[in-house]
Image (cartoon, rainbow, N blue to C red; front, side, top):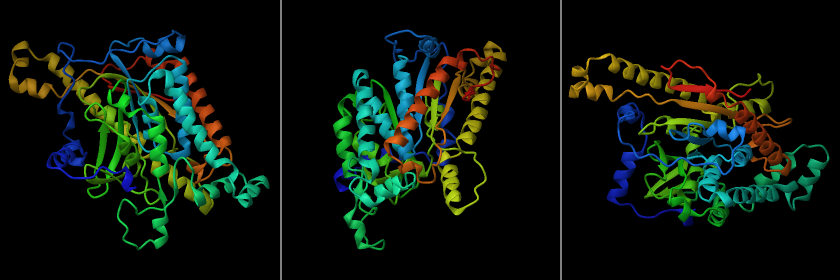
Length: 431
């Protein structure tokens, strides 16, 4: 993947690396730059006005002057077709996210969304997913595997064909890997597949010049191979290119690391596959409606075979502690609200004290509504579901994402909930 790397290391690049990487020690102190409060002058993005009004649109955009709409996309390979259905439903309802955050396939979908104007967004998203289906169609020229499907093997033949030959517009077998797993071929070649086809596909379908204008903010997550630190690349803070998207999807050992500013990066999903922390930790904080689109199931039935164990292990690993992430953020935001309320109880003379102002800056009054959307299990799926790019699999997951999102928009629970005002994060589960 040398052709997808950014070469050269500069002192400035190294400094930016140290500044942006999220280590546990720094994470504990990120909240100090609190929301400046209603009286401060903060430049906020102009609220997007939908082209048409429907009940669902009105529900999601009623407080548009102060609430941003955020789309958070997990990684999960072929399961990302569910996200395409979510995007389609939001688009049809006239809702454009202000910010899209993604990891792995979520980063690819995010680039297709944020990297195209509204009138081309769905078309480019459709083109990508149709290309994935064509590549996986019945094992292509591998007739024996296609026959296996026809004889009742489910999608196993198509899945095996993907493993053997890849997907023409996504990845292909890496000839360097034939030298054996012990060959020292470099971190940018040490993988079973080459993602050079994906690079070409992204350059065809994503307008990176448009993306750099930050009409829609985009953030993608990747993990530094050497330091093990998670880094979120954000179009608000720096220009993003194809290498940032590819780094977020460089899942080892299938795909090789991608070099950015002289440092190799892998898929952020191996560190944290649920990038909702990026918006909940953002500064300055804003009231938000967050559509958290998850592809993996934290809970599931007890497995009874090795095959089922492999599937359950994968679900747990890539669900990536989504519930515990939000539980922790609920505690943090509640404390911020408590600090705000305590500050209000102080006499004016105390509130003007610089030390008190410094401490009260940890408080805020923002509210984060998290609308959960979860891809359903399909009948007969197993631990290979994330490489099930068959037309049947893609269509079923996309249709589910579309239907689930329409139901959530019709309910619009964020406009009807009566929550304790001390709470800062409010979750809305599927009906």
